[in-house]
Image (cartoon, rainbow, N blue to C red):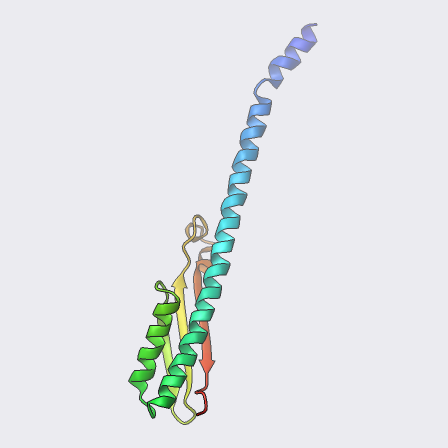
Length: 136
């Protein structure tokens, strides 16, 4: 009888501690899943914005008879339309071929990944795309 009282006294609170541990672990897994989804979606959007900007800039360059400013404006507008938070960080036109290369970057809005040193690099989405002007 004395032995069962001692065991019961030692086991009190054990279930509560395990439950709290599982809740914390579940919350961390949920935050990691949300951050991962946010990173993947943002990378897809940045890649799509870069492809669209390169194509639009190449088309504008070709249709304006080599006007670099028109091509640059077309790329800026395409990036802005695709993702308002993304930035056109690099724009290069190869004059002889009319090939346009653009780089689009964006910071990924995450809950936890941007605050941890090991995962901070994952929160910077960057895509470089090249497009040749469409033939007439």
